[in-house]
Length: 177
Image (cartoon, rainbow, N blue to C red; front, side, top):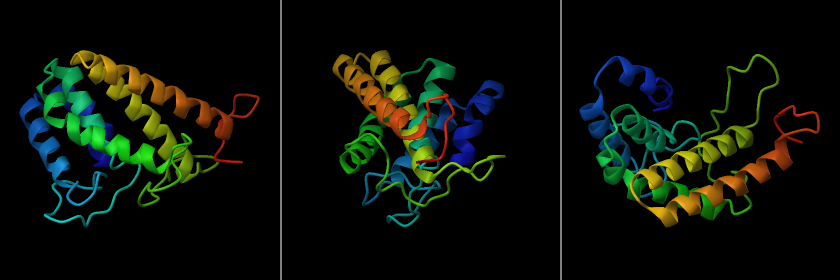
């Protein structure tokens, strides 16, 4: 699902993927069988077997957001809201300090970095912050005022923890201290 979330915006710009986005989002929701986390590939199985992974699992939030941004159709948000909330609530419950240290799944990380390889914790926390911003935008678009405030607060909590842990005084972001 990581490849899909990375290229979905370009693909949906070049082709009408609205119907396929709704179908694929349903497949992603299916990977939450027995867990609040999205799997790493979709369609999944009828059981929780694919595992999860920061960046890969975040496609469950990123793809519905991308479909909405590209089409303006909020129905994709409505269809996926409960699953997306369940995912972010599970991350927060396991990581109340704002750093995604626990339950980040398979540690794929960022193997493409030309320099220092960022830690899985850095990548996971950055994706969690990104998900919170997307959820805030989708909440606003669908009239969920309280949820928009909740996700704005969550983003600020994650941002503060991220800066404290990963951003050096010179502004350099490093894989951990």
